[in-house]
Amino acid sequence: MGRKKGVEFDEGAPDDFDPNNPYKDPVAFFEMREHLVREKWVDIEKAKILREKLRWCYRIEGVNHLQKCRHLVQQYLDATRGIGWGKDLRPPFMHGTVRPFLIFRLSQAYVFGFPSQSSSFHCRAQACTCRRLRMND
Image: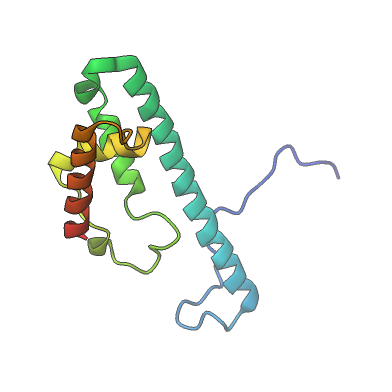
């Protein structure tokens, strides 16, 4: 006998879990719950990694970030759509759709935060963006 060379993780859902009667086997129920939570954390961490890549792209590209970081913006918005702890039971059509004219504004708001309140132009743009988001929900 000896030590194993590596660690083996059980990455799949439990085989003996019955979705029609989830409480029949308590061990399988808790294993399934752990599996779902683990998958959710993986999705959240993927979105965080994409956000860091997007920040780096915005800093490096400067004024050309609209063209050169567009693919990262789309990947980040796709990664954040439908993940989170409150959206478990909501069907995908209720997560909201992203309008093309809001992609740039939303991406800057999520990555850098909203601009300071000192500029009246930014205040109006922020209020307009927030109203559009509320109307679409």
